[in-house]
Image 1 (cartoon, rainbow, N blue to C red):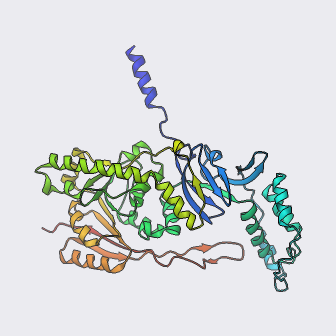
Image 2: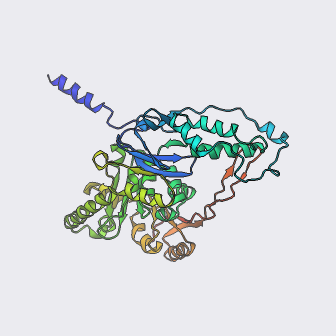
Image 3: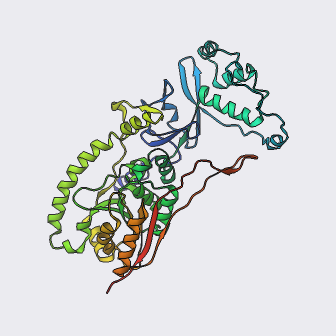
Length: 447
């Protein structure tokens, strides 16, 4: 009987508790990309989740179980419009015909008389169950000027009509890059204007590798904390430290769909607890912090439960899609940022952290660095991100005066995106010219 008990325990341990990260499961967070980046929105999948495109609502149930990267298109059936997964067909490269095309748009007059198909006829086709591609083909066939247009203009015409009559939805997996790019595109102030190349620079200069103990001052919503935890992959620790009694909110960590193994490695502790000066009465501090954190957890739980509602209401004003999720069917993600244990804190007091990342857009870098830099072990790297240059220059000057670090340098990340198309490869006409500044260095002993 004992052997059977052991076997049953082992069988329970081998059960896959965490979902496959390659597939979208019920309750996980997803990034919905409508019409090639025209609209971006985060959502939590459930059977009752609804996506609003235009003036119609579409159920997100077909997305459950689909692999990330799947493409969906709006189609019309007997029961109305719905999202259906499609498999894009690879088209042959027609770049050779682009150079030989002698047509142009000089003699085309835009007087709204080129289309013979009326709006009533298009609506009649929709009621009869015509697909979006069929409506587009009918529009092309009834256009007087389509054949006269330049080939590239024809492609733009098709793309414009496709976005209107056959919108497509790309199911993307939320990870550090996609989350950072989505927020930087729509709400850069929420992440301190932290661009994706600056985020990668923080992880690289801080030497974030497996089994590292990384100290993080994250005031950008949890983006840096999630990026570090993603790179560690369930090894080492990510300690989110803070001043005072209330930790900084890290609600973006929920979007990463981390497993329980990774979430256990994301902890939080105040600077006073980590400092060796308060070792005299750790129990009193822990009790006081426990009360404060209990109150903060209640407030944060109530605020994070409304994250999706706040995202949707904000995106509505910016022309982003809406999602309506009934409260009874919302599946909340596991909460990250548990209290660090006394044994772990004691270990960090003795050995120090292996690296430090500071992303505090609302704080002076020097006021934060002078408190958390002594928590690092000697020869450990640190990086400080700020939106502006002057606060980092002041912090760098004071670090040099105090002889607290070496190899100090301020880096300005620079990024240029290119459009790569046949006979049309060139830098994007509208690019981000600013991505903040990064101060990096190595801590040394001052004695």
